[in-house]
Structures are given as structure tokens and as C-alpha cells.
Length: 214
Image (cartoon, rainbow, N blue to C red; front, side, top):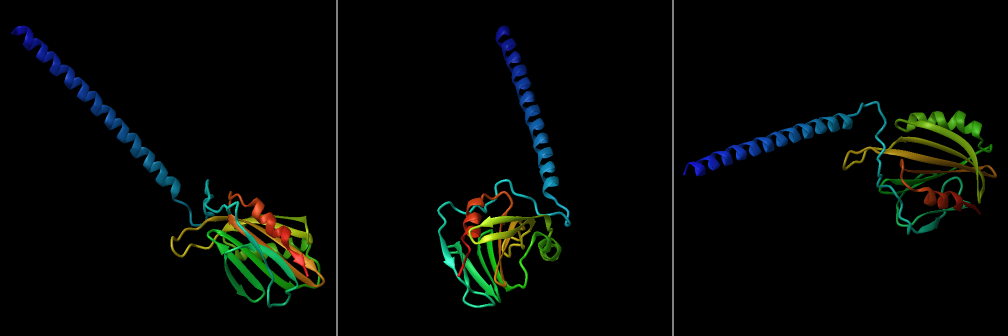
């Protein structure tokens, strides 16, 4: 009988040790989790003067099977051109500017009378200062010339914050491509925008390469 009691005491001691070990591990894990949550909270908080954060996996990719249709303005100062735009996107027009939007992406087409051909110098001196005022957190302007099927265009790339979403209140960091085309006293500006890091290189090339003079 004495031997049985000894085994029973040993068993109780072992059980107590195991319980204490598990309790310590659980406490340590909880402390680590709390520290991680505090770190995440600190990262998500941003200064009101800082640009919107760039998303690592932006939901702004235009699908590979997106269809494009030709658009020709029916009014305004100049209508003698066509350009392909994504089919099915929402359309709004005001004056000589038409905008097509879908989710986080945007195509803006503006046509105006112009007495001179746009150059990298004129875009740098005139357009960039205007955009600094109009586009929230405007940064990283780069001006160059590119060749498209319609001829030479002045390309201005830059970044800026999107308008605040009316439903979610979210602001997205956008990348912009602005192409200035010119012919016979008229200028057509194509501005293509979507989230930074979105894979829209091919769709934007389709649009910018599709402009055709009539």
C-alpha cells in the first residue's frame, strides 16, 4: 500500500509541473501577440500631410480580357479624332473633357484649341504647376517625348492621391500617364490613371497607341 501512495504523489507532482509549463507558454505567446498588435497599429496610423500608402497588391489591375471600343467626341472644340477606351466603363462628359471610370481606374480625354505644339518645356513650365495645385500630394513628375501611331506626344508621368471614396472613405495612391498630342491647331490630352503597382501597362499602351486623327 505504501508503494501505491508513493506513485500517486509522484504522479501529482508531474501533473503540476506539466500544467505550470503549459501556463507559462500560453502567457508568453499572449505577450508576443499583444506586442505585434501594438506595432501594427502604429504602422497603420499616418500623418495627415503624408501621401496615401501604396498597396502591395492593388485591386486596380484591368483584366486581360478587357475589350476596347472606339470613341469619338460628338461636341466640343475639336472632334476630328478617335481613341479606344475600355468597353463598359462609366462615362461622364463636361465641356471638352470626357472621363471613363471603372473601380479604381480612369481614362480622361480632353480636346482644346492650341496655337503651338506642346513640348517638354511647355509641359514642365505650364502643366506641372497646375497639377501641383489640382492633384492631392502631387509628386515625381517626369516629362519626356514618346512615339505613338498618331505621332509624337509629350508624356508626363507623376503620382498623386485619388479622390476619397464616397462609400469607404478610402484614398488610394495613383500613378498617372498624361499624353499630349497635337495636330493643326488642336491638342488632345489623354490622362490614364490607376493604383500605383497595378499591372496596367498593356491596357494603357492600347489606349495611348489607338488615337487616330480624322
